[in-house]
Image (cartoon, rainbow over all chains, first blue to last red; front, side, top):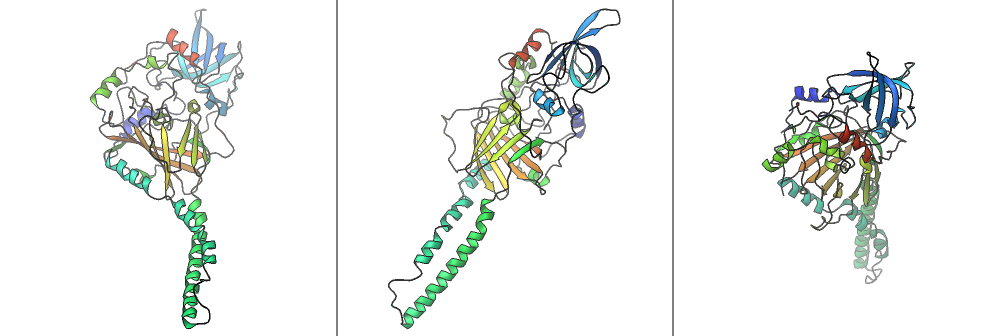
Length: 128
Length: 308
């Protein structure tokens, strides 16, 4: 009656800690990879179903590039200390996330920190 | 309707425990009034016997009422599911609840943040027409201005990693989901099933009943929506049967969600869903903003379908 494949389940659950959203995460982002980006905040939207951080990143060749970081649902982030003004335009931050599957400049937020290393918001509470 | 559906409908038709209580309540004054029978002349042996019999009957009645009265609070005090509940996948699966699922039911292992990849439906036997539709699913379509804030039905919403809040009354139980500000109303007043002309919605029409310490909720009249968030949708014929109960220590809410859709599925699906109580907290407003979809429409790369 109960059909299950633990191997498959393990693969599916790898990114479960913070990745779920209204739209399908799996088809847009790669849970097996991680990317870290530092840049200056150009825009911050704190809206459901997902927030958005737009970062201007200085590349090694001197050019600037833009990254878009999708966040989890703000209603979930609020419980982790986030608010609409927790990130200011012009502020330099570093984010770690899951990259878009086609390696474009787009990622899903895992965690973020300020220039001095302070975490932005609190880590997700482990499930009780 | 399946055998399970028939069995549950039969249970729904059974007298509610509160009916017994309502009958018992007026018996005490009636018994007291009838304690002296006007047709029995006093002083005769027959009268004595009758009086003795009446006294015995009254005593039995009084005892029965007292016992019934003592039992009333227990009957009325169903488990209190009220409060704020946060989804948790760390709570062990209740094996008895799984064992109680009807035959031909597959348990979907996608509760919480987990998702099935494209083309995987967790063991659901999908009918050809629905499968064809699922294969044509384009995730980008979900992120249009008109779709980005389109809520799923309770089929998918209940298992998501968003909290919910329960307000429990005797005639109604309200389940307020943070996800998309959804509000479910569960009628506990024994009303009949809604007719065919009753409107379909993402929360549907829900009737509940207590089976011991378990709240059983049957929901019909659901608007078509996703089952697994990867292209597979249920029809308006979907029937959801949920069993809710508290853990032994009362800190966890345990549920099975059974899915029965004769237009889409050749078998039945089920999920085990559990939540942990967090006193003092409340769900936040969701206030979905569809403008988020513009990010996907204008700049987001074509999504990969390599995880098949």
